[in-house]
Amino acid sequence: MFRKLGLVATAVLFFATAAFTLHPKWTSVPLTNFVPFKFVFPLLEPGNAHYELRNVFGNTLLWVPAAVAATLLWKNAKRAVALVAIAATTAEVVQYVAGRRVVDVDDVILACFGAIIAANLTLLLRNRLSPVGD
Image (cartoon, rainbow, N blue to C red):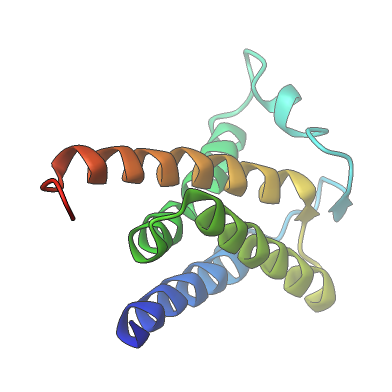
């Protein structure tokens, strides 16, 4: 049990570190956004740059491995999504404290969206592929 928990914790720390260190330093946008979907919906309109769309999909996919690992450990999608929500929020808080980073509530929302999909697909596949009684 502790080994699995350690693997989940390692995955979460890895992706939190990646979210913090690989996030670009933006200069043309406000450094904070606490209004949900303020930047997401305009980015999805036709004609927007490829990079902005990558940001939306990247934030959606960034926490998927942690959600899958937590779902396999706990067999509970709600707990996995809660873990991702806490970890993504922590990453945004660290970025805020560090300064000169974009802190966006949309990043947390997109992370949770990706975690919801990943956790539920993981449970669905696990239930279909597992022998009866597992």
